[in-house]
Length: 406
Image 1 (cartoon, rainbow, N blue to C red):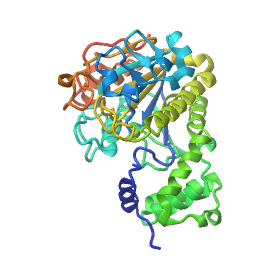
Image 2: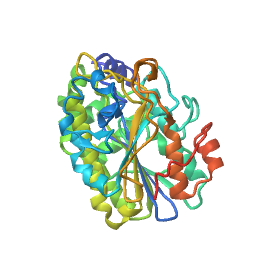
Image 3: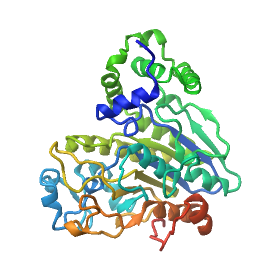
C-alpha cells in the first residue's frame, strides 16, 4: 500500500462527506502574552455552526415553517428575550445568561460569499481579510500583536491543521506541547504518519508529536489505510468522549492565569448535514464544557475575560431531507465572560421571508463578524481604530460600537 499523501486524504474525505477542515484531528492552540489585565479567548467553531438552531428566532413568523422538525422542541428551548430562544443543549450556560455573562450575535458573517467551502471560509475568518488571503499567511490576532508593545505569541503543538492561522505571522512564535491535549492514540498516530509521509516538514513535526505524547509506532501498526476515514471518525469520537476540548480549555486557563492574555483554539463538529438534532446537541455540550471549564479554572480572572466563539459561515434556513442543514451564509457568534455586556442578543435581525433571504436560501448577514471582533479588540486592548480597519482587518468599516464590553 503506497503512502497516503495529504491531497489524496482530503480528496477521499470530501468524497465521503467528512471534511477535514470541519473536523481536524486535534485542535491547535495559540497563546500570546501582552500588557494589561484583559483576557481574550477566541474559539473557531469549525464546520459552520447553525446559528438559527443555536439562537432560535421563534418570534419570526416564518421560522417554524422553514424548520418543521428542527424547531419542533420549542417547549424545551430557553427563552432569551421573547423573540429568540437558546437551544436546549445550552441549559448549563443559562445561569451565565442570567448573570450577564453570556450573549449572542445574530446575522453576521465574514465577507466570504457563495462558494461555501470550509477551507476557504476558515481561511478568511482567521486571516481577517475581505477575500482569500493568497500569499499572505498571517492572521488578524498576530497583526494586532505586531502593533502592540511588549507582546509575544506562542503556538502550542498543532496537528490536523497546519497552524492556527488567526495567531500566525511575523510576531515571535515558539512551538511546544500541553500534555493534557496531546495523547495520540495508535490509530491517530498511524493516520498522521501515512497522511504526511511525503511532506518532510510535517513528517518531522508529527514524529516529534508522537515522541511527546508517548505514542508507540508498534501499536499503530493495526491502522488500515483503506479504512482511514472510518478509523479517523472513530478517533474523533474517542477524543470527543474523552473531553479533549475541555482539556485544551483547562490548559488555556492555566496559561491565562499567568502572563498569557490571548488564547485561540477550535471546537469541531458543527458540520450538521444530517441528523442535526443529535450532532449540534453534542457540539453545544462541548462548547458548554469549554466555557464552564474556563470560568471555573480562571477564578477571579474570569471577570476580566471575554470569550468570543466564531464560525466560518452559517447554514441554510430550510432543513434538508436528511434532518440537517447545508452550508449557508449568515450565522451567529457566542460570547461569554465576566467582561462582556451579556444577557442580550446583539445584531440586526433581517427576517426570514422569501424576499429577506440571501439568494433565497440563507440568512442575510446584516453585519461583518470582523466588526464585532474589532470593537472587542478596541475595548479590551485599546487598539487604534485606524489600525484595526486598515491593518488588522483590511478594508473593514467598523461602524458604530455595539458595546459588547463592560
